[in-house]
Image (cartoon, rainbow over all chains, first blue to last red; front, side, top):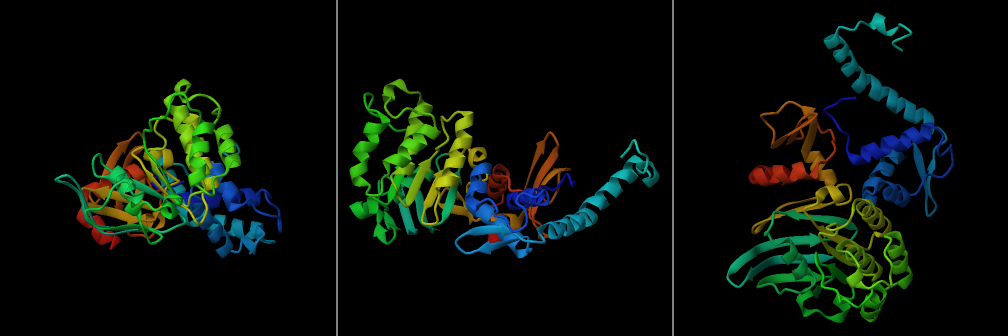
Length: 116
Length: 275
């Protein structure tokens, strides 16, 4: 949303994994794709993908079973939606508000069906 | 681990390095960048023992590189930018000749990589394009089973689909015990692959930092106006891209070309920021 900001690659990959988790891929307690597979799919350094997985684990979105791999937490969806809601309110919305002001679009206009 | 200590090197009377220190621990794919003639290829040759330091040391796992002992040579492979290949030979014959020197060589890996890169292992080198020869050599380098792989401009000559294949192959083959060093000017080809990044200039290491540290110290802002406090700015179709000191602690997407220009123009400031 912030056109001046481009998230770092590890954050972009984490975002994408979170979008997939929200869509149920993988479902709760099912296995995540391996770090290696994700790295190969995007042609990025495996250490970068490891950072994305570390972040998801810190947020409690995925958990690690030693020697087996990473799995989606039971409440992964709720946790991700909470993060995405916070991001929308704190980062996206102020920009939308600012842009609406610039363009003279009132909040009432947005409630019209043809706009939404 | 590759360790370079207080190393001086000169070609006859022309000094290339004086007193440089660098270490390359295992578990990383290093990007080695620098303007033409700063000694990137020379550094790779020193590491694989093809050049001898005038002063100082260069070692691999404690073994002096220029001694070129078999136990050191079997741990490392260097793929130069251009290799003169025997016209009548084939990739399969070529690796057959190398195999006795590399105890961990795996023919299965080689054939698999050749298939992935779509080059026939029994075709004569003289019937191949430069790109196909290069692909054969990349497949050979990655199947020798060495812990250390040095690539000099590996994407040079590769067609567009092969560049993506090269990235995928490297992320698939790379293991924790490996140290890969890619020297290149084609940073876009390996943009999200190389980490840490080492930038050389005449007689100095200007930057040696992992991507995480770079994006902690520097902020890459896209599509705004030109900023006075920018270490480097460039006009793109979407507006200016600015490289500034990262004051908000927010991580952004690294752009290696912009990083390179920012580092070259602000050597002292970069040194302070990364100290």
